[in-house]
Image (cartoon, rainbow, N blue to C red; front, side, top):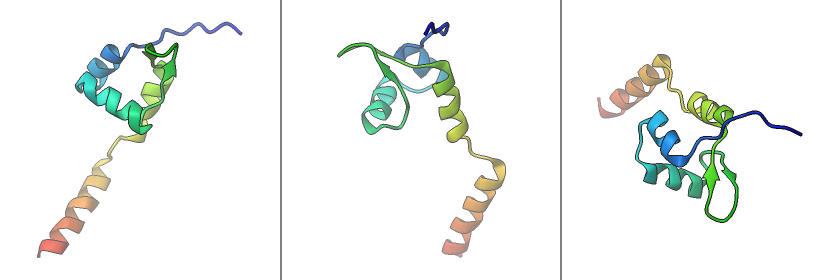
Length: 76
């Protein structure tokens, strides 16, 4: 099977997600973000997995409004 897909490095994913590279490694350790381990030290990410990670963690405005209302009801 031939895979014609570029893999991202942890640095590239950190730039895409605008987080520190240490955060990427933390997410790897916790199993939060899917990754490909090439050998003991080389970690890469498939673009589709990064996109799915973003979609999974996307917060919709209605979700935010609901969360804010819940917090306000607790402190009122």
